[in-house]
Structure formats: structure tokens, C-alpha cells
Image 1 (cartoon, helix red, strand yellow):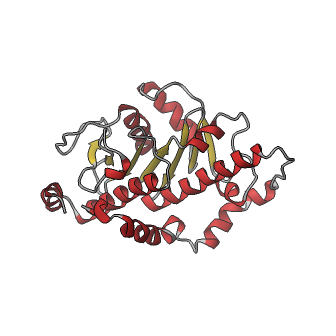
Image 2 (image 1 turned 180 degrees about the vertical axis):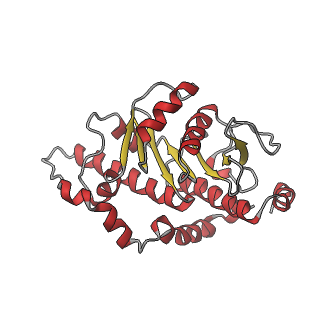
Length: 254
């Protein structure tokens, strides 16, 4: 355990420390699955408690380097709650603060610039009902048009409006975003989102007629998701994902 972890852990609640571990794990898993973009995307998680604080990555660190103690805690105005030698990504703050402020259920917001996700975000039709993975995405999907790098606060209301109450948001010509009640939910949702896009890119490249899934099946996808995960959502797979990560490198826990 690093010296920084020894200094930080006694100063935060047990609930916050667990959230830090889960969020650091999420960063490491995003890197492991190859969805990261150097230092330029971001994942945030709300700190449990009455304050409107959330954790986000230290700007300048690779996702594969992030630890529980290195995460930066900020308020909805972007002010650091704890001292940190790192700043935060200004575009990350714009996107994540908007969603956290608008959605009480948005305990984790995950945004990536994955190659296949960006490719589909540039396709005019967006996500197509081509795979079993896609039906779960399409059952709760919204779109937001590209307005340039997300640096301007006046984009926030449009981002929030377009997201609405959905769990998946395709940022046109930009990337993918998921919202979850937990870090686990947001990560597993992103797994399905990115896999949907990868399958679509490969299917379209085949040059053969495509068979689309019927609308009635998409309409029933959420009920099927609840049944297949036994109501646990992303939490069903999360312990196994942590075991996978621990076998590779458990230093995210420090």
C-alpha cells in the first residue's frame, strides 16, 4: 500500500473508501479491455453521503495507473475537496457534473472514446438491432449531437435533456457514455454498449444482407435483463471482474 493510501484512508468513510476501490478497479478494467484513450476520457462516481461530491481521475495519469487513493474528489463546481497534486480534465468535469447534478440515480458515469464506439457514433442510423447485446442497449438509448470538445457550461442542459432517464448515451462523433446506480452497473452497461458497436462494425463490413431483430423483442429486453441477471444487474459479474483484475495487478486497491 502506498504512503498516499496510508494518509488518505483514515480520513474518509468506509463507504467512500469502497467507492474509491470500485472506481479505481473500473479504470483498470477499462484499460484492460482496451477502451481507454491515453489520459483523455473519464469515469466518475458519487461519494456516498449528503454532500454532492464525486470522484474522478487525476488528469495526466493513464487508466492503468489509477489507484483508490489517487482519485480526485470534487464538488459540483469543480473545486477539489481534498488537496491533490493533479487537476481534473475540464471536459470531464463538464459532462460528469451535469449528469450527477441532474440524475439522483447516476452514482457512476462512464465515458469512453473506444474505436468501435466512435465509429458507430459517426453512422447516421446509430445503433442497429443486429445482436443480442444490442437489444439491451436499444431498450434504454439516447443520442446527443456533437458540439465540439465539451468545455462550455451551456452545453450541460442540452446534454441532460438528451440523456433524459436513459442508461446509454451515444455522443455523436465522439463516443459512448453509460450511467449506473453503481460502478458495476455502469461498467457492465459499457461492456454491452462497446460490444454492440464492435459487432455492428464487423457485421457492416461483411458486405452481406443483415437480419435485424424485431421491435417487439427490443421492447421486452429490459424485463429479460432483470431475469437473466436475477435482479442484480452489473453486480452479478462484478466480483468475477475484480478477481480477474486482482490476478493481474491488485495495486488499484491502494
